Length: 278
Image 1: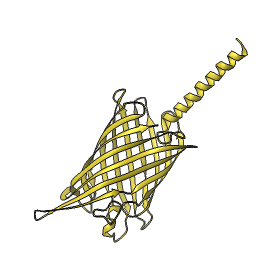
Image 2: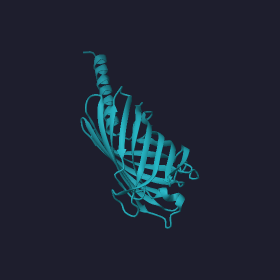
Image 3: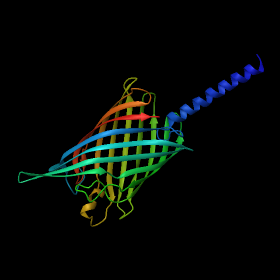
Image 4: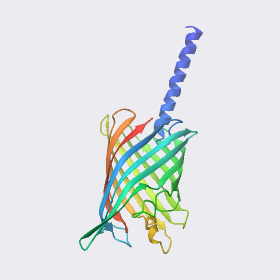
């Protein structure tokens, strides 16, 4: 065999090896895609609540309260930057309605506009074919109006450092994201955690589930009325079905229910959306 044929064969093997390594790296880290690659979810969410969790204690007990409902447009995604870095974002706008009934008189207050937005920089740490972890520093920008009734935002900028860790198998995956949210004005702090998993039911259909948990760790005293959104204590599980139309396009439907909390509305929400990967 000629030297030219040997060189071509070695070059071909090297190309296959490089491609395989790139595929393993891309599959291994669910948070940091390679430079120029990414994915985003575009979703329409409907929320409705007529009950309120009891104030002063975290639990499942509720009382009748004012009705709160909103329709939200939400875009969440990740954009690979290279060097194990990616940009993450969570952008929201909504129409919010708060309805009170007093002496058979129905009063509706509504507001429409952008809500608080979240952008973060993510750094991948260890990763292999079935394990990945990373750290993220998010900034929550107070872009939602607090003067509208009801308010569309909290009114305070916050930092949110997160740690993410995930494991996966042939047809399943589980990921955990956890960390504090610290409001820069006033020092209010929350601890947030989210577990998300999925299992492939068929070549195109995936069943997913998630649990979101948040507790207020530190609170200003006294807390101004307009800042009550800083006190956020909630446990919310959800279930999701995602269908693979193509390798890049996956529509989904998701249902979530507030099952425990303290002093906030207890409701349910349903989301319709699509995941696009590029």
